[in-house]
Length: 79
Image (cartoon, rainbow, N blue to C red; front, side, top):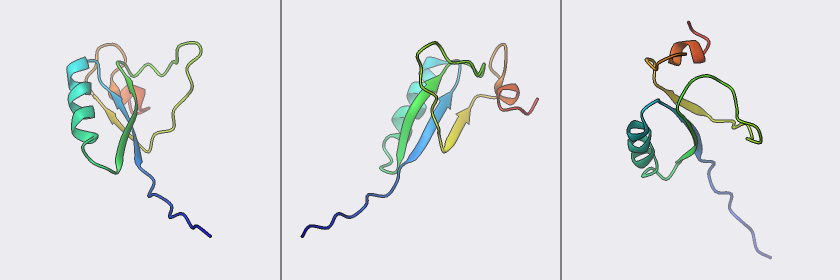
């Protein structure tokens, strides 16, 4: 009889920043950690999903606070 050991759950992260290079840097840095997984990225805090996209359920959101349009604080419900 085989028993399986449950793998520890990875921390699911959503990156939100209007700069592609910043998101790429965060992704590269975070994915070096075995317990972190970037599950999605967004270039704005608008909150709307394009048609056909599945919503994500991150554990952590890394959010740029000074994006054009609807900034990070507004997108997070704080301003």
